Image (cartoon, rainbow, N blue to C red; front, top):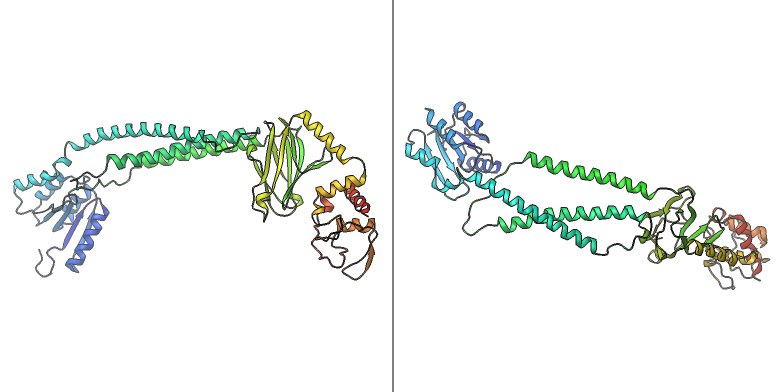
Length: 472
Ligand code: CUA
């Protein structure tokens, strides 16, 4: 003790593996004693405690009585052995009031005995660890069985809720397999967390009269390695499965039927270059791979038939044609919808998709060709409709975004630059392939799309002109 200061001790050693215990005590002592000469050291291991007792010679040791890392017997031995004045304060946070102070010089054998076997703590000594190991084994077995049962139950429920529409393409198979595997992982992870949580809440809940805190546990290396390595392995395995599935959905059939898919605000158009057919319905022969070449006239759209599973964005720009392979396996009517927010009518951007037998497909091709016929005027009308011309140009003289086609041929137009032209074949061709060159007065330049030079074959443009000429 030092009578010249207002504090009774100068060197205080705090022995506890719990950092909160040590920090809290140290702050409290600093605040209360206000002694500039006071030195406080904190140690967390048995060896460090013994070494500080021998070398640093603290005059007060505050020992966390609940800390199992520090051996009370060894500590007591060292405490009794020295001849420097030293006091020890045994502090237990588990039971209130369990603070006992012993002085080295006055410690009696009975007190030493008490110190080792304080009755309050007797249950935490000799017989406790084996009992705990036995019962924790029991807990793990119960929890393991519960997790297996829960996983099976949730997986069963998930697999039996019709979350997905029927799988109607060959490309849907690998995707659905992955989906099922994910369902299983979701079931397992959910059970793992919820069962441990629920079991702990029920079995380890606070019982009336129980006032002790839970054990202080500082890390567990094997556990941390296990819960890092296993999920890492699973993630790598799923990445492997994902790439295998992706390759599977892209497997090419050299005999594939080519269909050019053109998306625009807000319609789908399907062109069959092998047959010279343009259609607003996508017709596909069953069990035959179709190679879709997708493009957009304006903004980004996305081609998606949920029953076929695969999905592909359509991008504006000649060099940005995207490919998608589809092998329909089920006959029937489906719907392609746009899966990319593309403006006002995005939600209604749908077109029918019909999967038919090869014979029905051949018949459809014949019907389409017959409907188009050989009359250039009739063909021109089909091209004009398929390419959206009639959305802006009326054929009955009514006003619209662009000039009406009725009686257009042969008219004299005054242009925005003041010159005058006669509407003839040459003018109409320019107006379609290079619409900004000669804009008639009263119509804004830039409204007519600049794309038709590339998107409509020249023969079809000439036939559209024949159609315009026919509208007297
Ligand atoms: Cu096109 Cu959304």
